[in-house]
Amino acid sequence: MMDLMPVDRRSGLSPKSFAEEYLHEMKPVVLTDLTSSWPARQRWTVEHFKASYGHLRVPVVSNNYSKPGKGYMTPDRIISFKEFLEIIESGPTDLRIFLWNIFRVAPELRSDFHIPTIMDGFVNELPFMFFGGEGSKVALHYDIDMSHVFLNQIHGRKRVILFAPDQSRNLHHHPFTVASYVDLNNPDYEKYPALAKAKGFEVMLQPGETLFMPSGYWHYIEYTDGGYSISLRSFGSLPARVRGLANIATHYVVDKGMNRLIGPSWRKMKERLAERRAV
Image (tube, rainbow, N blue to C red; front, side, top):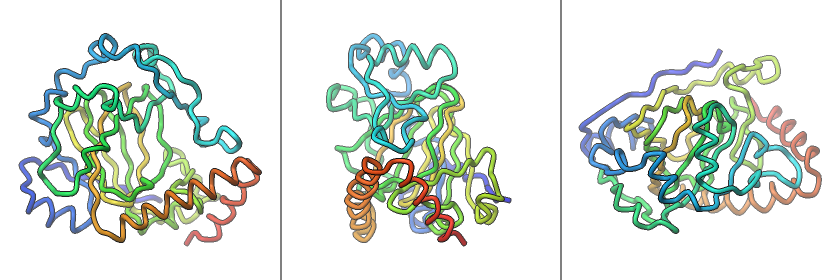
């Protein structure tokens, strides 16, 4: 059976303590006070977003996002931000907005948050927002650019399951992708026997908390409530950056190209390769 441990929750961490206990150890941690001075904590309400930015057009995805074929990794539809927010307010839905840099069209929102000083290397140009309805899920994956990610929860709660990079084979990693499609809520140990050996972490991220996910960490995210967060990215070692660039080149060219050509057959080929590579 999978072994999932709780994630440490810490406050008042100095950059030195953070580096020694978590960054250098490549261990996740929830920082409970990193965003305590952010105006976003009070200003970024659903009503504020609807009133000030509801006219923006946003790409919305659903559980179809990873289905093989020509629509692989493309939005389901483009709707107004206000319409999307009303949908997630109305009840459970699988609709999400992810990796949205709203700050390019609304730069004034940048004054509502601050780049952390807990470590160096943050990329100011890459703040992304994530929105989702209650029950929406983000399939198990690791971030293609290999950055360290600080996921700052603003509204609602998220359940997050994490695995270190050395667990990739146990997770039946699909080759040419950064994804796995095992169902962590209902694990099928007969189909995915290596999954029973997987060791990871589990946490319920609360509003106002920040989850540090080290470079290359696998993560599955489930929106317990309709809500949203902002992620800030920091790049670490040169080898990690090089691997991130290689991932982007390989996955976008090979994986997307083969999906367009043979769709479901490509998915089956990746599944077979993942089974062979599993421990």
